[in-house]
Image (cartoon, rainbow, N blue to C red; front, side, top):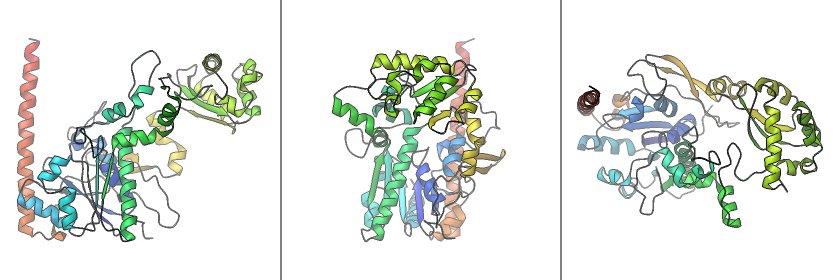
Length: 433
């Protein structure tokens, strides 16, 4: 069966998450995605993170998660041969996108003005931290910076404490989602005769999009929202996360009818809330008409209820109540084994050199007539040089020269890094002698 983006050629010049995750979506939908990497490779190839006892040199989980199924071409864009190879790849490409900063793109002749003049039908995508305009258009960004500037951190965490980072890189991943959406929109416009154009978005812009309701509420009321512990800053009533007797947690949103609310109150041994006039309608149970004092009282009662039983006791009861919106807070291990995720194909398996088969997130969008699919493992650095660059018009000798140069540069950089690390280690040890 033909996949929706089959026949679309994509060239990406990206690192980390915000760029590569956009390419991952396009690849799962059937596009050919060629990831161009500088001699050292995408730095996320070497990230280890916490609690990682895998062998040294094992490819990083971040790289695996957002680059599976792509082809890797390794070349040095600072050389004429490398730049010519890049232009060869772009000559018949449908899409080019990047999360490199604008000065670097201009330096290598990969800015929009240059490429649009050469390839007028090319869809050109770019994503950065803070948007394409303004004094901070070229400011460096990591995920948390976008969350801070976009306001999300201001409403995340305890009432009496500092803001908390979420447990996932939602700034970067959200930016990638918007980039993929923008690229798809531009491809549709091209099919309708618009030609190639530039698609631009950012992690900051995505944070604003994710908080449209909250930001608009503040704009309309003139009143700030504040951190509210394990509750949403703009929802009163019981909605929130509660600790159970065994130290686990349950999110309770609302009871959509009175019978399920009565059953909840009886099971949790808080019958007084079943007859409380402030909690008799679905709207009231989502905070309608409640003030802060009402909310504090109701939440305290609900918290006492959850502390009387274990998470699995609550789980067993709540599964009998389809009119209650709730979920048990799951660990990452539980998420990977969740029958619901498995049933929908949200989890897939990749083979990692030196480690073997491991699970990761798969294709999350299904189409009834032209479905996409997961597309294999994360590529070894430069594994497609010979195959892909021949198709881009380079000779065997040019490919060998380009590959040898990239290898030499990479080995020199790694040797220098080892020397620097050893020197730093010696300096630190000397301070404790």
